[in-house]
Length: 498
Image 1 (cartoon, one colour):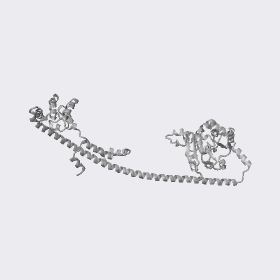
Image 2: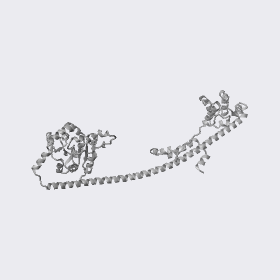
Image 3: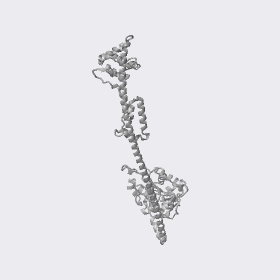
Image 4: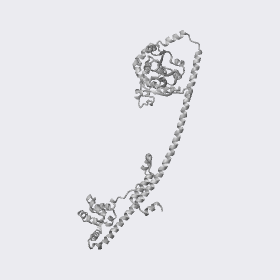
């Protein structure tokens, strides 16, 4: 005997059925974290759709508009449903509060029956006006009244008891049938819940399998990326070391060549410096005053305060130091400095401020310095004057001379600003060409530096935060970029041990 047959042989109460439904639903309900995944199952009406159990509505059991009704139809209903239908059919309106408070307690207490209520309603003014026919109501009402008489009532009481019992049996049969129908609906819903649960478990299993495969793929991809990055760093290190060896060979070859005459050197020096005073006037006109340049440079101070080699007292070499604005700013913050510039007029002006400045070629000076002797190398509006060969040499020689963890910072006009790239950059006839930010970052990375970073705004000087970057949405963004930017990079701490 199956479960459904057993249930029908012993009908359950409504409370027992609802309790069993709640327990079944609770056993298959998805966890709170899976509600989003389970939502498609609830929305679709395909596989796994769960039909709902609809309880019968007794208020519409007896239809209106029929030619006549029977007492049995009303007797098959419970007290509340009977009274609502009696009012609707006999009086043609809904039951009011007065009728409910008067008849319902008497019906539920067994003091009156269906026949007496129907008779009272039918004999009322509203009932007579409505004129609904109820078969055998008058004889049943007479029998009910006779059964209630003191003396003769005992002769008619058995007939009334039989009538009431018959009505009760029909009502119980109707209720039992409804219970059986509800049990069938509940069992259908429970079966659908079980099927839906199996479907959901299959989906969860597939999702877990897919997640495991994706996790394994991600781990392999991460390992491959880490290996590739390690190979790239090793290759860059090798290139930097080979470049260093090549420069040493070139320096040795230069040392072996015969010296030039002092007269030739003097003439060449005079030729190189004949426009120095003119360039000082140019700087004063187009670059800005000393106070302005010093103010713009203050944003870089946090970088050097937190660089360990600088904080330990190492020297910051500023190449192309000009009038000494950056050197003066560092000196005021107790940072050791030295400057170098080709322009003897500017060197003289910087020295008059008490700054440690020498005249000469910066790349040649860096070549002569011992390895790991500088804390930082800076240059403001210098790199755009260099050829590609000298630019790479500057990065290489600075890296060789820097201590492990030492930094470079080179500021240059920003060609991302179209006014700068197309116009103001060309004010200086000694400029070589504009240098896009990503190009200078690339040079720093391939010549062995780490943490290469483009500084466009003051926010970029906070090395703990990501770069602000440049992602133009329209052509106007190319006019809003800052006129200058700087490239920052750091020499690896483990230089020479990789």
